[in-house]
Length: 488
Image (cartoon, rainbow, N blue to C red; front, side, top):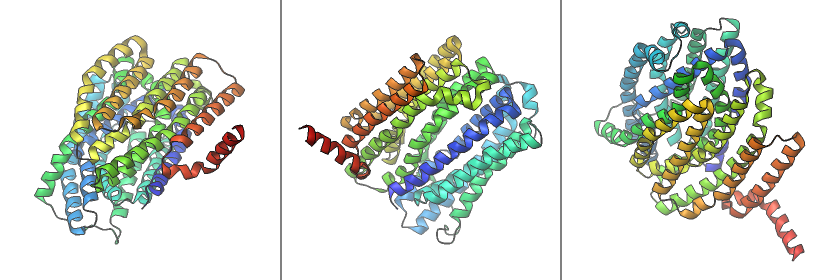
């Protein structure tokens, strides 16, 4: 199946998920309040972190299954072996959540014991969901290795809708307590795994009878050892800003930071969507030059798509936040969003060397980079949050994103000209953030500047776009050529 069609499925799902989020967050805030919403954010952050108990086998399974896509017996052995391991490790993660999560949140994240008392049966639901979620990562790996991105994205979109709509509906009509929100959220998330299971067990693609292979287990765990290091460090580094805010400033500050954060981070769905499509393809091939060319084209395509979105976002951020959740908007909230836009540019593009290193059998490089980042990031984060509050957290997160991106590009060995082509769109994104942060612009002036940036980027895109995209710019390219001929 073509990469462009798979990418279209994935990005369409991402856009629809953004739409659902935009509708539900203001309702969440009005129904359960700022502090409870902050606690919900922290709980789901910690839940995502517990997914490290899959030991990196999701990436390992994609890599191994992609290489044996034509061998049904071997693929089945790999699949059931990964499922067996994850059932055991998922049970260990579930026990950890049930016994220690509440105490951890009170002791280290300064979450109110009174509010946590509302969760009650929610911790049991979270524990069960850990097992369901970890098994779901392997089901997802099977679908990705077979490039069945339509089914994958149907599952993710349905989960996104149910996960966001059911809790806010339950809180509105049953009880606005954390127990209601968390239990109904767990039910919503389980829908994704159930859909994955349904698609994986369809007769045409169903794996053969369950079996467990020790050699396969050892091979995947060796590969997964480094990806699990990444799985431990990366979510910690990625989410540490909100944990630090919770610990130092409280749950309400987490909510104020998370609202612009969640909005801006939706742009990350674009590179994440592209990487999920590209990783199985890069894992299958043994032609290094061909794979590198594919990665280079994908990087340029990503920059062409990401830059206009971030520029439009920088101009629309303040008026949109004011219209969307005016009751909770402050100058700090807007500044947080603008700073994160710069960070997301680097973080989004870094996904290409990240998957390149993992697909070419070098997950250790990614793990070592993320391990080296953690101590400097903790120090910078603590200093900036202590002195500048939630704005400091955004600055620290963006500094880490820049450092991470530069290290990944350098150590991946991607050609310098690939990275050099990204300087111009970054300059446009940077200029748009500076303009919107320094000046108060009228609606007309904002529209004029956005249009100017988009035209400039379109001309640049026509010049540098990979062949797969140039056909889409054909009419514009012809127009520019005719104008050039007339001038000459």
